[in-house]
Image (tube, rainbow, N blue to C red; front, side, top):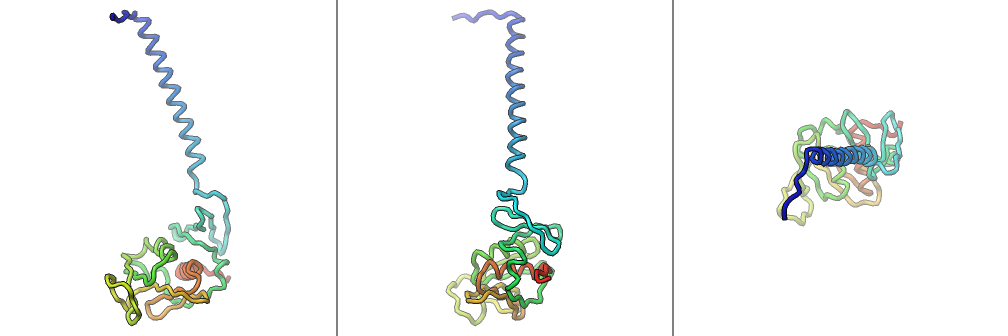
Length: 191
């Protein structure tokens, strides 16, 4: 079968039509990407909930309260006022963790929150067993309170305390973790 010979006008007409189709498709993609960016970007917040406590603005994002402190984003499950009843007896501040190796004893979901918030400051982290306690794992190191350790203990009362370099988070894990983080960040929720 022979191809029909096309005139110069036919070729120009086909080229213009193709350019028009490509132009419309590109404009459509630009519009859709702009709409998509405006809808799906932002802070990821489904609720748009915000709070301000102690001069710090918190935004609810993906189930966490996010605040920018010292130029970095920190995430919490509770606002400072929601952990005001948690006794915190800790002398450490955030700078005490700068460049340190931090050991976690009995890690759990709250340890992830502590680690995510301290990760920009610490050198590294590792699971460990506390010297003198029963340890069910044989492949992790045994450390004493001369090392920086965060130890989770299942207790009825939620509290945070310090013995040497060991921080004990007790009771409700997430509340204890947030109370500890607010304390080392110098966010005074009781004011």
